Length: 431
Ligand SMILES: [Zn+2]
Image (tube, rainbow, N blue to C red; front, side):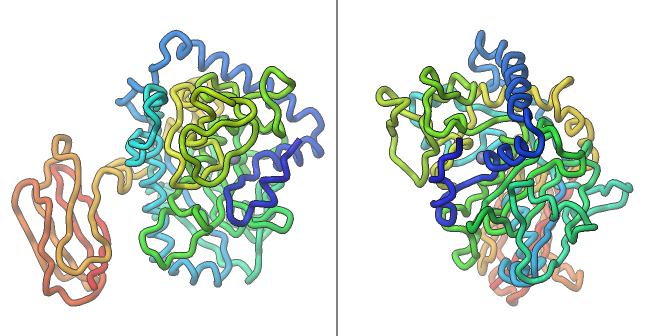
């Protein structure tokens, strides 16, 4: 069933554990794959009955975005911890990662300009926001992540969803209530002898217990690059692995249908999404449009730039309307993940993390730019505070967009942006 291309190319190219995990599941619980396929058929039929009539339904969905509280569990060894820059590095990756998934799931990704004209009408605003959990399951204030340093060399096999990383009893970190929080484990992942990027345990897989639900992602595929020196898996440095895995969590499968190189109509299966053209097998790297294969040998070719393909992070930039409809159905009443949509108060609801306010460049030496939606938010005042809590700069004028920080000594500072009713805070390094 599985094409071995994925494994041979695993180190340098995208792979994901979904197919191997399904095979493992089938061995443990025969009949699982059939059961999942039948359930997927149900969900697709229900979700797509509307979009078949009005294909652009998801494009028009721009309000009432769903907010899901997200918690990150870092289960890494001290070498990994140090290599990504310790706590500051972890927070940098969390912020950049949240920005990416919030952009990708809300049609805000800058690289949408690269979508071929013929497929622009299919480009979806999925309408899901991911907010860092600011309240823990016990009701305490939370930073939205936790960390366990594991013995050096510890790696996790993805074929069982990296189970050992998910339980404190086996050296990992226990999930937070999976009915309220989306749990994401960040760890060193492998399959066979190769590095693995990620694997997802969605609520639709039989044989997995509630505390195992979530996404597990390789620490070197997590976050989006903000400096050239950060370690990442090659070409997997723009945060798209999590976008892809979240697609799996909400019941999407790969664009080629995971059928080992077959085409729909000649024995193969498809992803059930009519908007994604038939595809033989995973597409790697960063091809140019149009890209043809045996299942789509002419016309527009295959949709290799879909988030559910295996192209590089810089080469994937869309979910289609029908894919969005499936994910929305999973979060709607009756959907497998509906409960995740019911607890927005547990997350950062002020600004849904960094998405709405951008402070850059960071690090900086002369100016700080502040970018936000001035139609939606009124910025009244900005101040710069040092790590001892002393206010260094204060600027009070409506809708400030730039701050002159020339002359500030090299150090970390906190930038507070006082919007009407809300304060937005970010750390910045002056060098
Ligand atoms: Zn995948």
